Image (tube, rainbow, N blue to C red):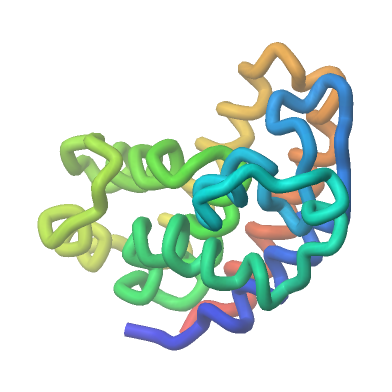
Length: 170
């Protein structure tokens, strides 16, 4: 339906930032939003902290495309909705984002977006779906035990995603 991956990746990387290793973040060592565990799975070997520090956009772009964009069928979603689903998938897992979209449209929330989910998505207003994804995501964040630590940043990111997604609509 669209070819927004590169644009969405640029916006996503602004949210993800650079190297981090926050004691309260269960993801541990992370750079450009990719955790050490995810990167090790991708390259099929253990990596050092220095290798994580040295990651580039070119290193992580294929991970984002395969593990999040493609898995959530973002190329089949309308402009704007693709970014809403993609950004939440990266931040909280592709299954969580996919299940949220499926719940919103009344599909079986199995975490695998397929033809039935896409048909239901296409029967809804893109603007309404983007807004409902925003509210579902915010509710999810506010229910997490680490909201006191990370909630302000998550909420800002969610709001920025909403605004960017609405601006992208066809």
